[in-house]
Length: 302
Image 1 (cartoon, rainbow, N blue to C red):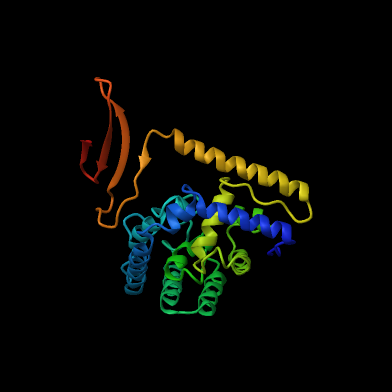
Image 2 (cartoon, rainbow, N blue to C red):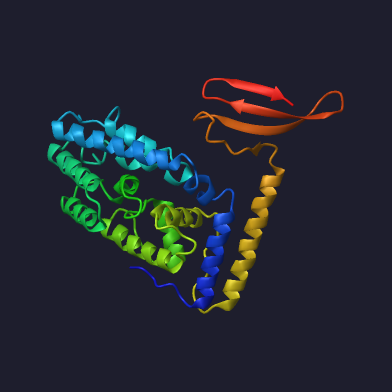
């Protein structure tokens, strides 16, 4: 399923791309992986999953997604920046297909609850993988590896996130043909991601969020993937394309009329601050600091 990274030339190209990705102010590494609120979200999402397990065990979960504890926790995942956008789609009820089949079938719902409970309580990847296989054997329609986005927030060093862009990036980087919707494909991709991290351990964390964020940016088209092994001309063209991408990214930032200021740890959650140059009617230029709070706006001229 996975492709071993080819010879030294491609390994160097991939290392170069990872280095560029780490430096990119607009890439997932700096906008999400280093986001100071990211670690706080792990605790909140774990508590949300515990609430889902408790309600299913007590028979109070209900038979709808809307308004459920599952909607609350999945929405929290979907709000984790661009990389998890659309994560809630997998759990939305599709009435024509009647999936995912954990709302109308009580036994399937309980199996899903046991799966989450096992993953909450275990501490090693072997137990999580066994729980995945047990859930897969139930053949619950519509409940595929998109559930792994919940597992990532429970065990970030054991289970990677999963979405179309990550799969596309993985296939582009390794030459694999991972498909969506199958747990065995997800587990094979997980093994390949572990190999990538091992080969680039000086650049990638053992938190699967790092490699997933990198693959997401490749799969969403932010960066061109390195070419396959043995084609030095293709490697040279790829290096030129990568340099163009970097220049275009820098040009877009310089043309932007609004420059973001990094929010300090003391600022209120939901607060955003920008600095904007403004020409006055009297021929002078001042800088306007705009502070946007969740419910109010202020503009202060300096």
